[in-house]
Length: 67
Image (cartoon, rainbow, N blue to C red; front, side):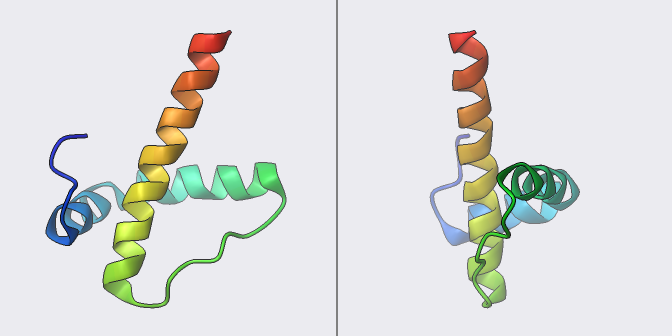
């Protein structure tokens, strides 16, 4: 994901993709059986959402490539 180095970039990504991220997050939390702790600050939360989406996507890609 080029362009997600700064908070301005991660916030823009999170706002643009919030529903997809929340869907991924809900599926992840359901699969793990726990609710992840999230930052309370809005800017940090949006940054957290972006990095969750990135790490979750990479994890799914690695699992797919290993199969």
